[in-house]
Length: 202
Image (cartoon, rainbow, N blue to C red; front, side):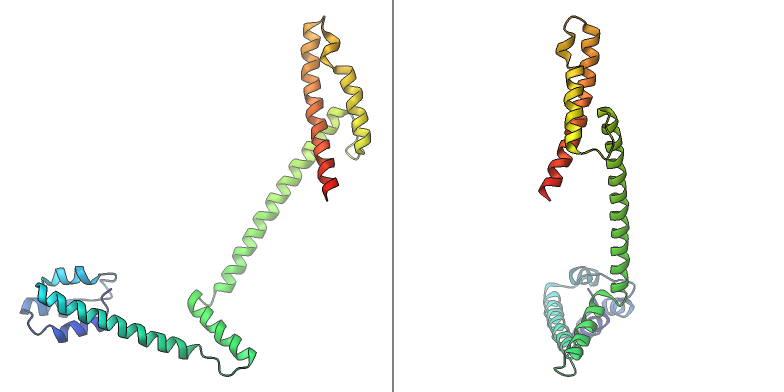
């Protein structure tokens, strides 16, 4: 990226530039042309190979110099006032704020609150779904929602004896109805069976 400092440097080393090239340098505004890289800049200047070589060398030297100066400022800026834990924390916190912004913690809290809200909403939806499933399956088995697993198992066995499809071999219509009914009974029983297994694992 071409900065104001680099622009001044190019003006100093460009002793053999034409009037048109010098005018280009004078009129170049780094603020309005942010992000222009060195190669594009030199192409616009219409430099020859020797001039490009000098500009590249000057560019790299300046970049290295700016980097070293920034590292020095960085180290000094965040040096703790003493070996005291509080001073060390203050220095670290200053470094953190400069890197992520002073409102980082506030944004972080807002993000966490948003995530917690989403989590609570999902948990509420899951609970509501579970309660609906519980109510539906308890109704299929003809038991209370608070029934023990032994009561559920007894109800399941009694219903399967009553609606087992093999009992209706001579009546296709009733056999079909029994198959549909026994299928729902099995699904309902599996719901409570899995719930019991999960409870046992805790």
